[in-house]
Amino acid sequence: MSSLCFDVQDGVSRSISEAPPTHYTLKIHYFSLLAKNSIERYESGEFQAGGYKWKLVVYPSGNKNKNEKEHVSVYLAMVRENWLQTGWQVYADFSLFLLDQNKDNYMVLHDAEGRERRFHGLKLEWGFDQFIPLKAFNDASNGFLVDDTCVFGAEVFVCKERSTGKGECLSMIKDAVMNKHVWRVENFSKLDAECNDSKTFNAGDHKWKIKLYPKGYGNGVATQLSLYLALSDPTALPPGTKIYADFTLRVLDQMNAKHYFGKASQWFSALDFERGWSRFMSLIHFTNSGYLIRDTCIIEAEVTVHGVANAL
Image (cartoon, rainbow, N blue to C red):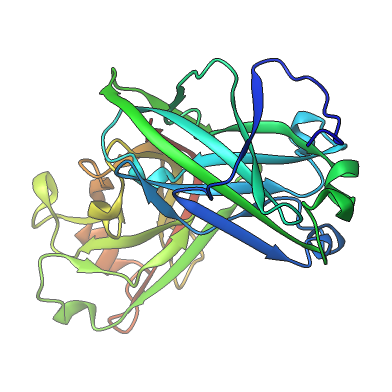
């Protein structure tokens, strides 16, 4: 290491270790092909340490989000699925490794003051923007990249865990796309179930369905056609998730092209997973106009998801 010269970085300690990393090793053959194939970020497979799942993240040409171009950037990332409880935080002491293949030892990067890093919903990655200069890394005489092969590693020791107050992250969707689903309901007069569901359809990365009550529901029983938009599987939503959507439900007038519709903007969640109208249209109007032809009606749903709120 005496022949190598690294820029002094505040808060970063470099040392040499004969022992390999305890928890994970990432070996990369033909490292140069990552950049040639426009792979700016590579995430390793998952590994466990301290009861949690982690990944190594390598930016072969530097983390451009940090305006880094002259160094390899390497980070430790906590896998998001660990967050089973809202507001959970994990404090970890970690080291990242790079094998010197010429000397068979490891350069180890660590926080100079031994500070624990706090991993939580808003900060899942910690590491080193300037892990090693590309010039030093690419010089095979230094032993880090030999025959276009290198080896990284990680050690992670969880120091403490604690839960904080609840929180959420609202992500609005730029250029949201409207999705349309058409449901042709045949043999309407023979529908004997209180509620009939359309096939599942996708909108905004979520699954939906139309719910039809042919004899009415709630305060529309016996006099109204009741129509709702619903999440297809609300139990699959992570706790605390809410979905904001514009939607239109429409029954087509098959004779006069004067369609009957309802339009709304609502939040959907696991506890409030269907929205619509118990008194959508009177059954008399529905059956005596052009909406029911040859015992068949056509129902349309247009859904645009504009935002999703998730628990932190």
